[in-house]
Structure formats: structure tokens, C-alpha cells
Length: 147
Length: 185
Image (cartoon, rainbow over all chains, first blue to last red; front, side):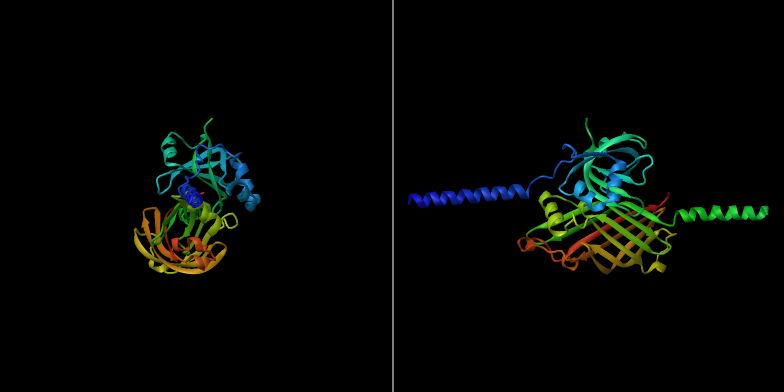
């Protein structure tokens, strides 16, 4: 009787733990790229040339495993996507291409003061490079870097 | 001689603005998909789709990054990238095609037109010829393109593990919403 109770209790605890782990995984939050410590810090030119030279290697380094990338550049233009988020297009003197950074809703409101020509440091999630018109590295879930 | 120069200048001044409007560009296009089964509703949005539309020829090109699709749940986003789309190996998806009923669309006149587009859609490194309907709206200097169609993951060699098969619909509804502006550079 006692032994079967222990087995039952043990079985129940395993189920409770398994269900909690499952639920925690199912509901786990997205990584906060806006506040996490950057894994890489580089200029617009360095980021573009990494993808232009070897896209597979750059994808493995900057995109896979949700790395936080911090990029330095000059604001070329400020767009808005159809969701209403601000998109900062960053460039660098003498570099062909741009880095397009979509800000989080909270950061979009905070970016109102920015103007083309302003130097900025933006951190976020790098999702790769597109190249229909010019080399364009894409970053989403972005924020202005603190500190 | 003078007349020739004036004539050349006149021709250049007429041709230049037209040339500048050759291509129309959309940099922050929105493509999203929706899958619904009794067990789970899945929705993901990509707001960084790039596309070029050339009204004179009807050529249209789309490019997007798989990693730019945002899901409500982090776990779904992880599964989508790692198990289904293998985005580390195949980071991009693109479409290259043509508007086949170009004659029925007047890009110089405001209005909404039905468009039929045919071309090659590449997802997960697999290319299929597709033909879809959409609408093209000419609105001042902008061109708005909207389309809605279904995609079957199996057509693109996307394997859904049996553990989650009941949670993902056999066909996924894809919605395209793009706003193009004249390309100037």
C-alpha cells in the first residue's frame, strides 16, 4: 500500500513537472533584443561587407540563434511600415548599401526627434540581407542602444 | 545646330522624368500567413518585404527573409525557423514573375484593376510555377498591390513533424499587401 502510494506520488510529480515545463516552453516570451547585451557591435559598412562577402557565414554568425546585433551608422531616411513602426535606414560614407532597422512600437514613438544625417547606435535582431536594389541588411525588433 | 541642341535638350527633359518612373519600389511590404485548425491558430507577419514593379514590362520581383516573420509565440517562431523552413540553410524566399494581363491595367490613371500574375515562387529552396490573382490600385504616384492565395507546405518540401501535424493546416493562407513608390536614385 505504502509503496504504491510512493509510486503514485512520484508519477504525479513527474507529470506536474512535465506539464509545467511544457507550458513554460509554449508560453516562453520572445527575446528582448532592445535591452539584451549585444553579442556583436559593428559599423554599417562592416555588417554589409560581412553579408556581401559570404552570406552563409554571416547568416550563421549574426542571424542564427537570435543574436543581438548593435550597429553604428548615419540616418539616411526614416520610413514607417504598414504596422506603424518607424524604420530607420542607416548608411555610412563610401559604403554601397544600407541597414534597415525596424524599431519596436515603444521605440518608434521615442525616435520622433531623429533626423536624416544623425549618427545613431541601434541594436536589434538581424534577419539577413536582401538585395533587389542595393545590398540591404535587415534588422527588426530594434531600439536605440543605451550607454 | 542650335535647333538640334534645343531639340536634344527638350527630348532629354521630357524623357528624364519618365525614365525615373521606370521602376516602382516597395521596401517595407507586408506579407502574412494564417493557418487554422481546431487545435491551433497560427499567424505570422513580415513587414520587411522588398519588391520591384516595372509597369512598362509588367515585371514584378519579391524578396523576403524567413527570419523576418514574427509570431506571437516565441516557440512557434523557433519551430518555424528551425524545423519547417530551415532558415539557417535557406534564409530567403523570392518570387519572379510578370503581370500577364498588362493591357487591362492603366498605370497612368487612378483606379483599381484586377491583375493576374504568373511566375516562379521559391520557398525552402524549392521553386514552383504559380499563377495568382490580385488587385492593383493606382493612387496618385503610388501603386498598391494586394493579393491573397493558398500555399501547401508539402509543395515546397516542407515536412511537418507528426507531433504537430494536427496543429498546422494543409494549406496556409498568404496575404500580400504592398505599397510602391517611384524609384529614384
